[in-house]
Image (spheres, rainbow, N blue to C red):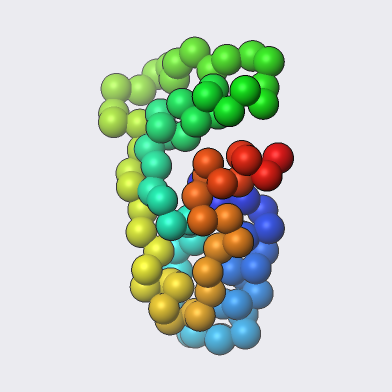
Length: 90
C-alpha cells in the first residue's frame, strides 16, 4: 500500500535520477498482504462498514513487497512508514 502523496514523491525522485531501463518498486516499510491491510482498516474504527471477505480468490491474498533497493538507488523514503501510520493520520 502506498498513499498517493508517497507515490507522487517517489515518481518525482525517480524522474530526477533519470535511471534509464530500470524498474522501481514503491511501497512502505512494512509489507502487508491484502488481508492484513483490510484487518488494519477494520481495526482503525475510521469506517462505519466492516470489510467482510475477498471473493473469487484462494491465494494467500497478496505478496509481501520490499522497496529497499528503490530507496537506496533513488534516495527516497515514504512519508508514511506503514499503512497503519497512514490510517492514524486520516
